Length: 527
Image (cartoon, rainbow, N blue to C red):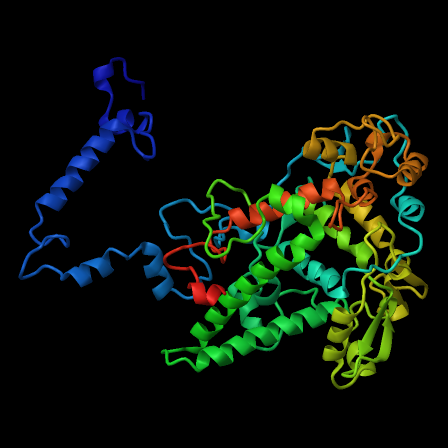
């Protein structure tokens, strides 16, 4: 078969298919002309076309108005089972972040900065190891050594925040982040969550997970990690059931599925409201809230932009949103109805052990711990970790240990956070600081060209720990920054967290404040 030797030999299909597409179209000008003419003829040559005002066969104004509100998405939702979320225009290619059921469990985490790994020369193509070398040659300090040098010390009690803030933050983190276990291969971390504040942690991320809620169960496998986390789950599940009972009283043709979905919708809206009106202002402070436009509007606000990528970023998930680990207390108490402590439970004794919670505190235990979470104080946000997290995380011995053996085993949480950052290829602290503020960090001294966001004490500790300022891990560098006024984090983590929650809000078509004519809450419901 030979190519055409003359322009007049070109077949219609081949010539038109190779034309440049018209803006916003799938075809070029020739096919656009032919197809457009044909469908114009279909419409104008049809006596029974649905828009004709024919007094005999035409639709009434009301019927026509209802027909014009139809979309393929509505037909699909009303006739097919198993669809949780469907985008309004099914003719558009589903994106990976627009709350679409498209490759949901393999969504790659977004990266603001280029990931940094050590590439093996003699190895399989694309396989690499974590960042292990200093910029001055030699090896980076061991993560456990950094933890002991930088993140040890007395964990002081906060005078302004309760454990509810601490554990709500962990609850929220589990709603937007879950990195699956994978086989060794070229690194590109994935997120099993939907990258929206949408109650995934409560309801699960697919129809199968949702079905388990009827058993009972929760939407996340980490719901029993600690007693306060379990309290958060129970509180919101009870809230859902309360809405179901209240909705059932309304004179509407409810089905069990409609009741479930409407209660879920309300719980998600309340969760979003709490995040942006109670939680974030205390974490970020007023200035950062204003910088990223995170304050809620008095009523409706059109926040959505189809050009915003709300995927969870690696810097947020692997470092910044783990700031709250330093707020955890060593001892959790159960407080009686009269306000007096009844029992206490050491943190190291109840990781993933709900049976301990139930056995040691029979009757009213959930309410007792909830009282402690709202009446007590959290640890101070100063980068220091309690012993239960730094030396006894998931402490186990003998048969209880997944690793086996008779020896007692435990993890170091700040060391895990540091190593996680390296495993995920996070660039150094100085690169993140420059990305956020445009300021370069040249030396350890806390001055204009150095660690100006650190105290002299913290800068000295970092100098004794790292060989070069560009070796500082993001987690350690940001956790030791001086906190912003009215905030729990310093400027670098405030920047990363603020940017992420701005993207969660502006990239969410279903955000509760949107004035969408179909999905919006009425003013009464919003209030």
